[in-house]
Image 1 (cartoon, rainbow, N blue to C red):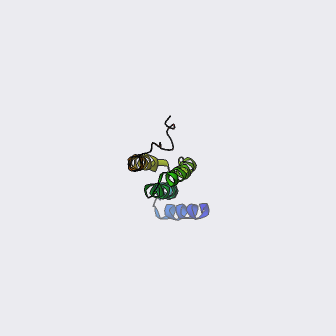
Image 2: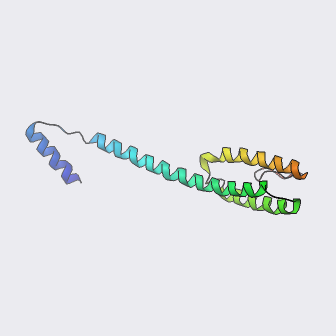
Length: 120
């Protein structure tokens, strides 16, 4: 690629044109950064989706025994995916808070969110 750049500069110099290669480099860097952000966003979304699936199972839990098992599974999934969720973590945490309090009131139990200390 450098040979091509040098050849273009030489040809441009012969005809009196100066060609600046920097903008192409900047646009390449911008495109590379955008692709990296897209990959990161997809990974965060996939991690958040796993936690949201577990949240949905918790929401649909029918009895306290089932709830306890699902809550434990949710805590494990949340612990495994917490860091990978990145920017989506606060939104998922808010959803989880709402579902845990909803299910607690529905079943009359006192479970905590996976990142909180258990109630004594």
